[in-house]
Structures are given as structure tokens and as C-alpha cells.
Image (tube, rainbow, N blue to C red):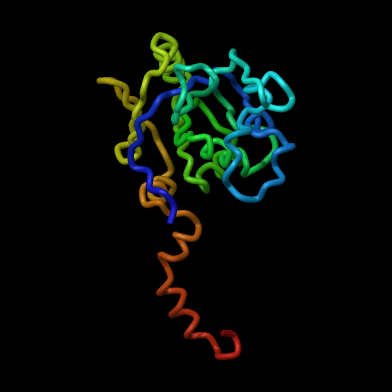
Length: 201
């Protein structure tokens, strides 16, 4: 069973860029691995490091700034995760420690891959996202709370409601990945199998 997501509070890192594609999230040279761990080191590799070997952090890149150390919520702009389909993109984000991304729009395939890997995507209006960027700029290191049960993003006494597909919400809250969903119907599957002719079992 996957990790359950009901509510999460964490430092917000503002990635103020639209149309961030999957090659920027995890460059193609790091796609050889087939396990889900180890990709966080290379998240936004071309932006995070000043050298080709990945030894010199780029001090201007937002993830390298001290105020955002340990960030677990990302704030971004429209069409995040566009480009080629690669499940490694949400693998890299979650391996780094990102548990939720807030933005004004996400590429469809990236959204599906994120859901399948228990990475919550929160879609808000551009005006709401603009407001959040202003708040984080005024107070770097600010913490947000993403409440999936009540479908709200909370900052102090302010709340932004968000919509999410009910099936995806159910799966995230209950920690159900594709295997977990199948196991929920284990008894039904076994009963169906027993009804089949012996030569098909």
C-alpha cells in the first residue's frame, strides 16, 4: 500500500516559470534507472548545477537557496510537466521530497503519472497562484498546509479551496496505488476465478 495523503504542511518553494517540461525536471541522461529512488539528486539538474558534472550548485536557482531548504511543497505556473511522457519526472520530485505541487495548470500525462505515484497536484486560478507567489516572495520559507480531506490550501487564516477528481482523492487519502486498488477486490477476483473451468485456472 502507498503512503496515505490526508494533510501536509511544509515549506513552499516558488518555481516562477511556466511551461516547465519534463526534460527540465529530469534530463534524459538520467532515465536509465528503473527503480523509483535516486532521482532526487538530479531533479532540475541543468538548473541546479553550474557545471556539467553536477558538483557546483547554482546559487541563483531557487532550490539551492537556504530559505527553501527542505521544501516539500512546490508553487509553479501553468502547464507544468509538459513535453515528453516520462514517469521519472514525478519520481524525481517525490524522491527529492516534494509531496504536493500547486499551480494554475498541469500537462495531462504528467498529471496522470503524478497521481499514479502519490504526488498531489493542486490546480488553482492564475489570480490565486499570483497571490501565493507574492506571499512567498514577501516571506521566503513560508509554510503552507495542503488539506486534501477538506480540499483546501491553508496559510494562516486564509484558505483556498480546490477541486480534485473524487476517485483520485479517494486513492490518495487511502494510500491506494494500482496494486492496492486491485487487492481491494481480491475476494471478488478469487470468486470469479473459481467459477471458471478448471483448464482456465
